[in-house]
Each structure stands twice: as structure tokens, then as C-alpha cells.
Length: 191
Image (cartoon, rainbow, N blue to C red; front, side, top):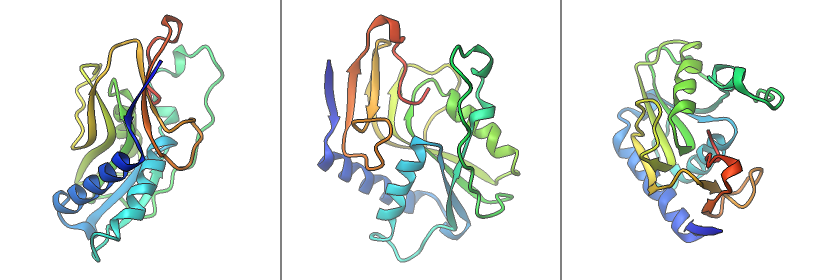
């Protein structure tokens, strides 16, 4: 069973609101770098990047991507083959810069924790914030909270947030809440 959380119109409005929040809340844009967490956060970041220019002439310092494959805490426990690392693209030095990490779903907080660990291998930013399209409430395993949230959703353990129709869709047109069988463990599309 599936339930639509955000259709294409609601999603567009959500992205516009997130862009306006970023522009008003992130301080000096010329000192702020936005990084999409590979792979799904990178798609969210690209959508935000394409919308930002319609709201402001001022722009962020830059955009990039961050792979956290080897910083995940579940690598030793995986039964499937190791995931293939994706590209990390940090176009600027992050020392003393503000960094906004972008992901699709905040679930247990483990991916965000891994992203912080991965980020610190490249330097010490002045400030780090987190933007997520969907915040699954009441499911944290680590004390992580997003600074910018598209939508907060109460989700049961056996439900999964699905951003887009298919995992590999480049263009995100909708967000679904899907009921999983007990064998799937109720994981989100991220963690």
C-alpha cells in the first residue's frame, strides 16, 4: 500500500519554501557551500540549485557532493556486497566556511552522522547545517536534527518514505509513504 505525501505541485512549493528559508537563514551566502549527500541528497540539492536563482541575484559560494560510503557504521554488518562509492565534489576549501548538507530523508540520523565524519576529513567548517526534504519523526538513533525541513511526517516502523517513483529517477515528482512487509524492516530510502 502507498499513500501520496507530496504531489508535483506540493513538491514545487516545498522546494520554493526551502530555497527562501536558505536565503534568509544561512547568513553570508558568499561564504556558504551546499553539499548534496550522494546519491539522493545530490538530486535534492540540484533541484534547490536550479530554483535559488529565481529568488535572489546573490548566490551561494558553491555547490558540490559528498559521498559517505566508507563512513557508514553498517559496513561491517552488511550481508550484501559493499556499495560502490560515488563521486565527492568539493569545489572549494571548507575551512572556516558554512556548509549546508542536503539529504532526502532524515530517519535514524546515521547517514547525517556519517556525513559529518566524511566532511571532517576535508577540513573544519565554521558551521554545518542540515536540510532534508522529509523528516521522519520519532525514529532517531543518534541526536541529529535538521535545520531546514521540507515536511515532517509521523512514520511507523513498517513504513518507508519513497522519494520519486523509482530510486534512480533524476527528476523527483512526488513523495510516497509505502507500507512494507515485515521482511523489509521498515527502512527508509536513505538509511
